[in-house]
Length: 413
Image (cartoon, rainbow, N blue to C red; front, side, top):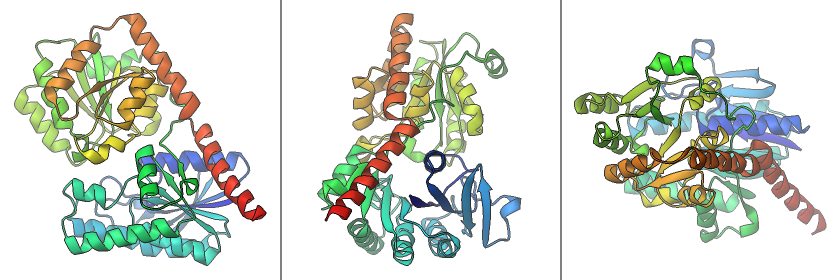
């Protein structure tokens, strides 16, 4: 099978969409399929295009065995909404050049968000006489409206019309969560044309390893129970509540330490909050490359995954969960809904109410007292779940099964 993967984000950037495209592409190629990735020049999260990509409109490269076409983008991650919109549209249009450069294909898989890239995916599929698969990881514009990012009513109506159009015109829709899958079916998509493509994990890269004592010493947290948050420090994560919980625990649980690994728009605000509250039990470590994350998980006793208390997030499956459980690190999930149910069902995490410092502090206090046998069981259950349901091999099996079923049905009709 021949596949084009159309996405705004790809390595060397880090993040869930980047990792998903990379891992799925590598797995498909290893099985003998033709894959080409069409993406923008690297620019996330700081809005700076690296020197080797500057001043170019288009570039082809081999990225770890994956053919990659890159085209121009106006980078503006921290600007106004309209500047970010300009960024989205700049790649939406420049990606047509990469489409012309790419080989013939059977399927175009297009990532959303950004929703507008679906225009390129749909028209590109027409140009290439290919099937259009819309991979929806976030319901947009609804999520932007609920977060208060998008307020212009005329623009919201236009975005909702485009959303309905793309859902209708897609051959199949791949969704990141069961909640999004149900949403698509409610919007009128046939259930046979919607399948799950969740965030996953490379279970060979992320596996239980011995604690890195030198790293514990470097940070100065030897002998502590480490509650590590690893990922974007953004508004949606509600990390101010985690810091408030750390404040409640700094005297009651002096052996609990909170380690934040990552960067993002809220970093300065969170660092100031740490200073204002006098939180010596909190460390901001900064970003590390993906290759260093197994080492970070080796020193974590628990992985903190947090979201704001928004109805839409009840259907979320944050990508941060899967490297943690694959590494044998139980999750403290500050949230509700789909992910909470999974972690509770498989006994590989503890649930705390979102944006509730007292509730989060209470959950942490309980985790501080569990026995070594209970901890070992949570660790083993999480690892088993990652291998059986969230390894990239199992996820690619699901992708191919859905595409092949559709093709067989078409051949018999």
